[in-house]
Length: 275
Ligand code: NAD
Image 1 (cartoon, helix red, strand yellow):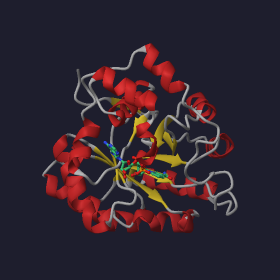
Image 2 (cartoon, protein in one colour; image 1 turned 90 degrees about the vertical axis):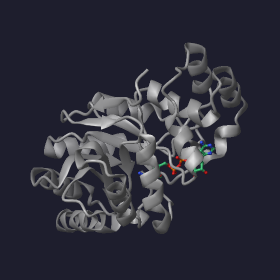
Image 3 (cartoon, rainbow, N blue to C red; image 1 turned 180 degrees about the vertical axis):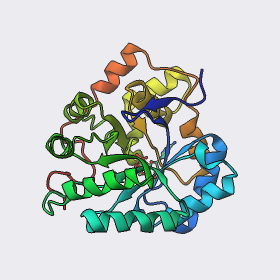
Image 4 (tube, rainbow, N blue to C red; image 1 turned 120 degrees about the vertical axis):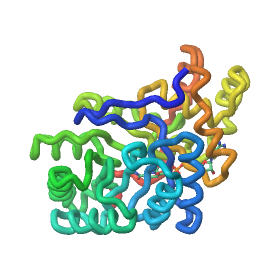
């Protein structure tokens, strides 16, 4: 079995399929959490300007002793910085806080359709890619109509769309829309923020494989071809969430998890109405 799996993005770049998220990780705890994750084998870190912990991500990366080209770092443009000029400046600020000269992936965090600036923001991301400040560019929380619009207007297809996705909110329609454009879907809150891990179906499948429910859910994302970025600040859980390479789910497991999907399973804001 491999000790990591990768996905080739539509711009030819390669991204680790299992990464480490730092949403709600306190700034003062971020460097240590990132250092531990990198020591455990993670090679991809997902932060955002609005998380307030980009400096800690940069610090944790430098403490790891790993080479820059061996770690894939993602950050995101916040809603209040959308627009062409503001988008360019916001990326510069993120790079300063991270202490890096480029990120591997820069995302528009939310379409925020009421502001109607996401198309201008997308043009800024295209410029940032041309300037080498972002190696790859993508979006987050984009509904199919938002994706269609930026692609129609610019001809540039995002490499991925990072959306809320977990067993109780499986996002089949949006995944299909992403796939139609060759956009990889990346799952945020992949563990449903931890609350759904006591679900009896997940507990039963976990016992069958001698793994935990969190590991089963992470394996499910990987087996569906999704990029997955679980978050934890607890060292034992950081390690547990990366220990998923020695088993695979069978068709019966996959069917049982598929049946956990609920129309009301969304936990975060609805991107179509938010912002
Ligand atoms: P998650 O689904 O990864 O759940 C994290 C929580 O689950 C932890 O705080 C902990 O309570 C629990 N947990 C983690 N590992 C566990 C384990 N092994 N056993 C039991 N419980 C465990 O939730 P998340 O942090 O919301 O999402 C992951 C990442 O996705 C974020 O850190 C962030 O990088 C990204 N994200 C992006 C957006 C966006 O709008 N683009 C929104 C939310 C999150």
